[in-house]
Image (cartoon, rainbow, N blue to C red; front, top):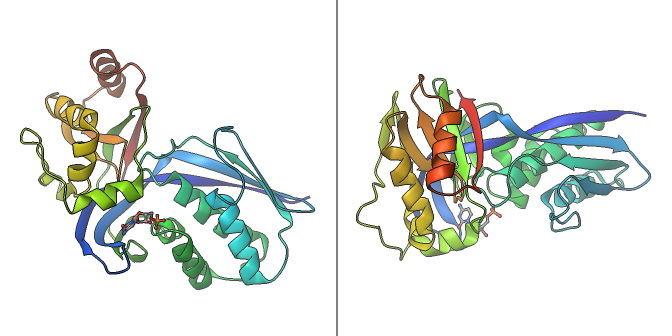
Length: 278
Ligand code: C5P
């Protein structure tokens, strides 16, 4: 019996610029995305009579609300055959975190099923299905860093960033992506919070979703300010629509010491992950 195990990495938006709101309700974006290979979900595909998704996280739905199930159904609708694989999804990327976990799982499902079918559909068709399922799913089918435009689904390869140490911090609450975009046009800045570009080794980090998300979730603005006041933090930026905050660290920084300090001073329930991009 053939099985396949694939990693579905998290992503970071190093820049996220909202160009305008479109007539179809989506927002026109210009975003630089990178994969965070040391934080990933794992999907295991096993031959089976019918499709079934099981998941290590019992709080996640496994029916048609899960992007893995949506992707498997869409793949087989395009291929014209019933699905003969079960998928076990081992979650490590937190949910509603702005780290692209669900999108990456969907892309990995499409790529995994196509590999198991001798690449019967091929990348252009997978890209088309991916874009129909979610704006940032095509990015995960590509290699490395990408500049993404349109609603995020038009990807062009970009230079990988220089190696950077990061510490990700996420409070227990998540952020709804549609809600963050909906609030963007009319939200206000908080006077003490810096929202502008942060320059790091030629990168200009910025996230236009910080304004609406901080206005609703003040704790995230407080977390950014706390991080920026630490000497070992070079920059701090909301990940996508949040609720994860990414701190870019000095090479000499100790991420465990920083994580311990933020947990003690701000919130002992923060999820955290130390990793590297580039
Ligand atoms: O495409 P996806 O399903 O990931 O998007 C979730 C929601 O986020 C959309 O329904 C829309 O409300 C919002 N969104 C947006 N503009 C984008 C991407 C997402 O307004 N470029």
